[in-house]
Length: 81
Image 1 (spheres, one colour):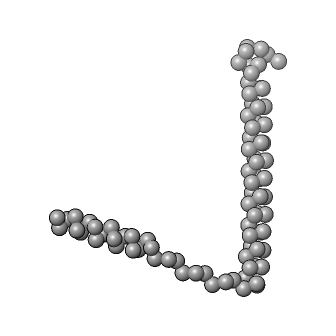
Image 2: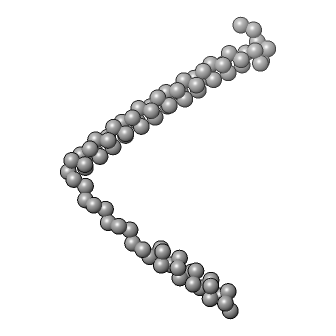
Image 3: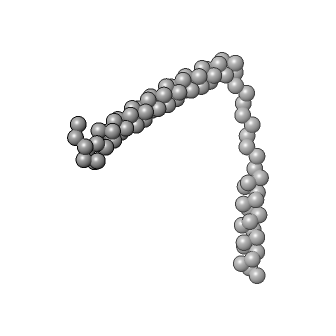
């Protein structure tokens, strides 16, 4: 029975820890909000630029592979140009 009591005490302890509310955040000043918005815009712009670069690189690699396949296809068929 003692093991059951210990387990129950542990469960209650965990439940109490989970029930502890988070501290409320202090409201941000107007200046801080503006800086945050500016930083978000910059981060999104940089993310978009990097995504465009990766997309262009992938398209370039696909194009190169397609050209390789087109060059190798006549050789694989035994056709000489």
